[in-house]
Picture 1 (cartoon, protein in one colour):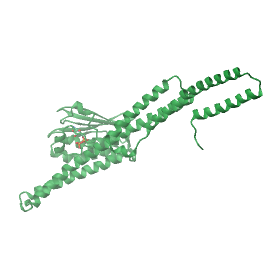
Picture 2 (spheres, helix red, strand yellow):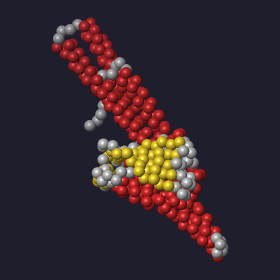
Picture 3 (spheres, helix red, strand yellow):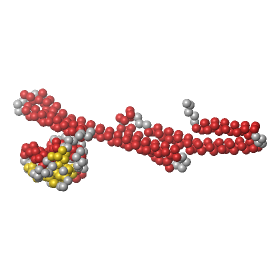
Picture 4 (cartoon, helix red, strand yellow):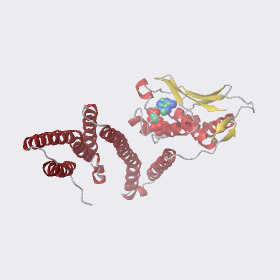
Length: 362
Ligand code: ADP
């Protein structure tokens, strides 16, 4: 079916109606020529007023809506260019302003107002999606950059040690073992980093927890025992203040919560100087158990406290790299606790120590 412009269609209908009525008046009824002239002039004026009305109320806003809605189109191929997001976001913001102005205009009829409202809400949703996609893209790029950077450091160190051995150090009894150990230590670091990356990607895609009731004090004891040797190397004492009451159980994924304790106690050991101390305690409340890990270590500056749970965030980048660690430990802790509807709190004072605290449902 051929589509015709509304104004053309109306003009044809009007002309046909005018001719029929004119012929009827002049031939069948006995109307004077002056009356026919007045009738024709009135009809023409009526035609002009109606046309102007249709044009202003329907054609003009519909044309404008058509032109504006073209801005809603998103092209997949442009998603790779960083400028695309910013230009499209500002284009959509302008579109929303234009639609807002049209909505507040006075000549709009009800149907057109509804169309504008609908396009306005579609534009709003598209804008929101675009902003989310932009943040996602920035995060992904930043994450990829961080991963590459973190992987490069141990790989480079391994390569250097092996190169030195190949270049002759292999035959030097005094240093060959040293270079081999260095390379081996860096492979452990690589493994730790890859394991943490796998954990992070699992948690971020929503891994299922296997929750049941268990005694958290047992897990605290077990974890502390496993890490006591590491603490012993720095002459750090690990104190445990937990209740032996068999009634005190918490509801959660035992293995994952042990990972939380390992990460927090391991950090406490890493960031506490020799001869310091670490205390792991619990507070038993009516509906929850609060677990606390306190150390007498170097502390964290106030300005960094909010950011230490971000992926790869380190307070002191050079020092942390020397100490080891992927920079993902606390991010993993946060994910696991969130999956238990719990949050981790941290308080710290420089050169006095740090206290991490979280609660678990009983
Ligand atoms: P990392 O692998 O570098 O330890 P984490 O995510 O576990 O990464 O910790 C992030 C940063 O928070 C660390 O680099 C360190 O600067 C700081 N941090 C974490 N725990 C402690 C602590 N107990 N004492 C002092 N600083 C800490």
